[in-house]
Amino acid sequence: MAMVGGIVATYVRATTPIVLAQYGGQAIKLQPVLDQLMPSLLPLLFTLYAYWLIKTKGYSYGKAVIILFLTAFVLALIGVLG
Image 1 (cartoon, one colour):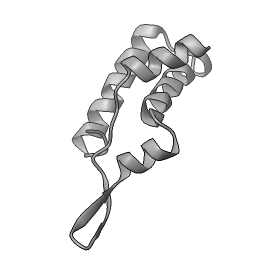
Image 2 (cartoon, one colour):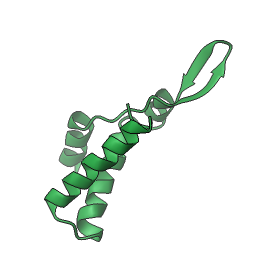
Image 3 (tube, rainbow, N blue to C red):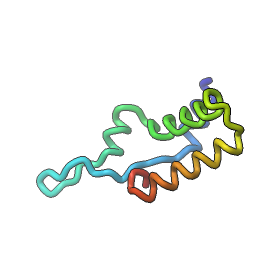
Image 4 (tube, rainbow, N blue to C red):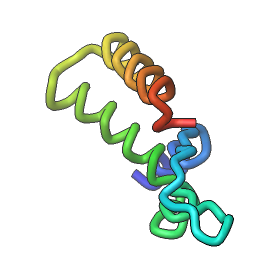
C-alpha cells in the first residue's frame, strides 16, 4: 500500500485554481490550503474515486478510465480543476 501511495503522489496531478477570498489585494487560493492539510489530497481523491468505480460499482478498468477522464474534463471546464 505504501508503494501505491507513493506512485499516486508522484504520477497523478490534480490542482485547483479556486480562489477562496480576496483580502487586501491578495487572493487566498484553495490549493495551498489543501496542500497544508495534506499534500497531494486531490490526486488521492481521484485515486479513491477510481477504486470506488472499479470495486464498488463493478466497472471495468477501461470504463473507469473513461469516466475519470470525463469527470476531470467536466471539472476543468467549470473551473474546479486547473
